[in-house]
Length: 224
Image (cartoon, rainbow, N blue to C red; front, side, top):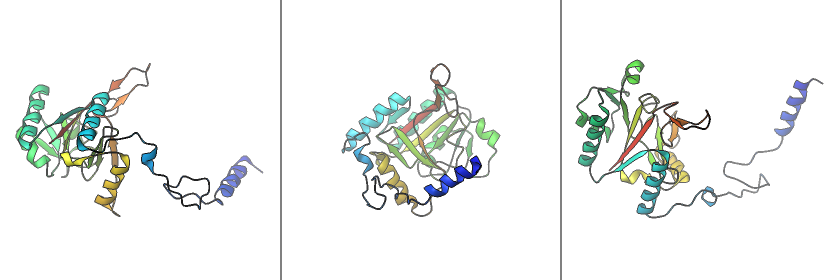
C-alpha cells in the first residue's frame, strides 16, 4: 500500500464519524448540547455607555481614530478638518444614507465605487469613505460587507479608510455581529464579510509594528 493510499484510507475512515453541528461543543456528536460563545468571550457591559467606553478604549489600543459626535453637522466639520490636515486632493466613496450626507462637504473630486470605476484611480485617492454594518465594542472592530462598504476595494486600497456610523450601530460583541448579519442578509449573504480591527499592520520583521503593510495605514471611525 502506497503512502497516498494510506492517507486516503484514514480520510475515508474519519468521514464515517458524523461531525457536530456548528455551535455544538460536546464529546457526543448527537447530544445536541449547544455552547454559548458569550460564556468564553470577554465580558461586555450591557449599557450603551459601557459599550461606547469599551469601543473607545479598544480603538485607542488598536490605533484607530474614533470620533464621536452629536449630529451630522458636527461629523461634516470633522471630516473637513481631516481633509485640511492631510491635504486630501481626491477621495473615494459610495452612495449611502450617511455618505450622501457627509461627503459633499469635502468639495473634492469623488470616485464612486458603486459605479464602474478605474482601479488605478482608486489607488490614487487619499481616502476611502464608507459606511459599515456595525461597530463591535468587544473587539473594537468595524463590521463591513461589500454591500455596506461600497464593494471590496474601497476599504483596502486608499491609504486612509474613514468609516461613517450611527450610534445605534454600536453593538456589544461578536455573537451580536453575527446576529446583525443574519437579520440583515438572511439567506442572501454578501460575497465579502470583513471585521476590520484597526489599521493594517504587521510585526513580522524583528517584531517592530509597521502600519499600512497590507492595506490602509490609517483608520478613522466617525460616529454620530
